Image (cartoon, rainbow, N blue to C red):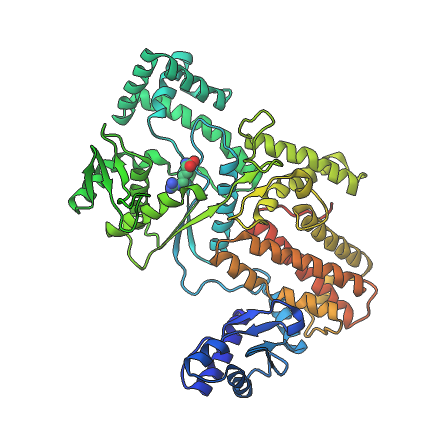
Length: 587
Ligand code: ARG
C-alpha cells in the first residue's frame, strides 16, 4: 500500500503546481498534536516565499484547488499558512481493512529501488569478552539490518571481528607455552576464561622480554601463514566464537558464522591497498610512516591530519584494513550502501576512511556510506557502566542478571503459571528489557543503565509492551471461547464502522505503522519504532477502557475485534520481526 503521506503529498503538490505554476513540495507530516488534525502540510511558507506571495493566501488557494475529498474532511488553514488535514472516517475504515488483509506486510510497501546494503556491526575482538560497547553495536546494527531486509533490500551482514594483529603473537606464544597438548589435539581446545587468557598473555609479554620476542616471531609466522601458527590462531578464534555466538542467540541477533568476515580476511590485501594508493599519488611518506591526507581534515594547529596506513616498521593498521574492507565491499560485494555501526568515538576514523575511499575513486556519488554512531551506556553514577569493582561488565553476566530479575516481574503478574513457563517468560522479559531500553533511547545520547527502570511494567519498556500484547491475546482467547471462529467473522467483513473517538484514535495510529518504519529506516533510529509501539499500546489501552469488545453487538463487535487483532499483529511484528524481542501469548 502506498504511504498515506506520499498520497497526500502528491495531491497537495499537484494543487500547488496549479496555483503557483511550478512544482513545490507540500511537506506533509503526521500532525504533532491531534487537536490540529491528523496530518499537516508545511510547505506553503517556503513556496510563498519563492513566488513572493502571502503564504496564508497561497494556502487558501491550494485548499480550494485540492482534490482530496475522498480522503480528508475539508482542510483548514492555520497560523502563517499550515494546512491541517483530518482523515475521513470512511477512508480510515477502508484503509484499515486493506492493511488487515495484507497479512504479511501490514500495509508497508517495499522500497521502490532495492539496493545491496552492507551492514557492518557487532565486530567483537577475539580473545576478549564482549563488553557493553559491543552490545549497543550488536543490537542497533541488528535492528538496522532487519529494517533493511523488511524494506526489500539485499542485506549483507558483515561481522568485522578483530581477529588479526600483533596481539595474536602474544596469544599464540602463550597458548604454545600453556596449552602445548592442544597442538596435538586441536579439537580439544578449551580456553576456560577468555578474559583471563588474554590478560595473562599480555602480562607475560609485558614482563618477560624473551616471551615478548617469541610473540613477535609468532606475528611474523602468522603473517606468513605457517601452518602450525595458523592452527593455533584458528583455535583461539573458534574459542571466541563459542563465546559470542550463544550471546547472539540469546539476544535474538541474526548474525551467523557466515556473516563473519574478520580483519584476517583482508590481511593479504593490505600491501596492495597501500601500493594502489601510492600509485594514485594519494599515499605519501611522512615521518617514516605511510599516510593519506584526506582533504579538509586538520589537526588543532591547522596542519593536515594524516590517515596512517602503514607504520615505519612496516605494520599495517586498523585504517588499512578498513580501506581494504571498503574496497572489497564495493568492488566484490557490489554494495550500494555501506552502514557501519560503532560508538561515536570512532567518528573521525570513519570520516577519514570515507574521504580517502572517495579520493581513491572506489566510492562515487552513487554509493552511500553511513557511520551510525551511538553514545555510552552509563552506570547509576553517571560514569561509563562498570562492575562494582570497576571492571568491564561481561555481557553474559548482564543478561543473566536481567533474566534473574525478570523472574520477580513474572512472579508478581502471574504466580500460578507452571515453573517451566515462568522461566521462559523471564528469559523473554529479561533479555527483551535490556534490548528495548537501549532501542528506546535516542542512540546518540548516553543513557543510564537501570534494571529497575527497564523491568518496570509502567512506561516505555519491554515488559509493558509484552504485557500489552499478552492482554490482547487473552481478549482474543476469551472471544474465541465464547463464540464461533472469530477469524471467520473477520474474514467475511466487507466494511468497518468506526464510531467512538477511542476507536478512531487507535485506527489512525494503526494506519501509520508504515510511517514509523520509514522514519526508523531512513534515520537508522530504532527509537522511532519503540515510540510508535508505545503510543499504539497506550491508544489500545484507552480504546479497551472506553469500548467493550466481547459484549458489543454487530456491527461494533467485528470492528473492535479487528482493531484488537491488528494491534496485536502490529506489536508482534514491530517487537519480534524488527527489534528481535520475543512476544508472549501469556504473561
Ligand atoms: N572491532 C572494532 C572494535 O571493537 C569494531 C569494528 C567496526 N567495524 C569496522 N569496519 N571498523 O572497536
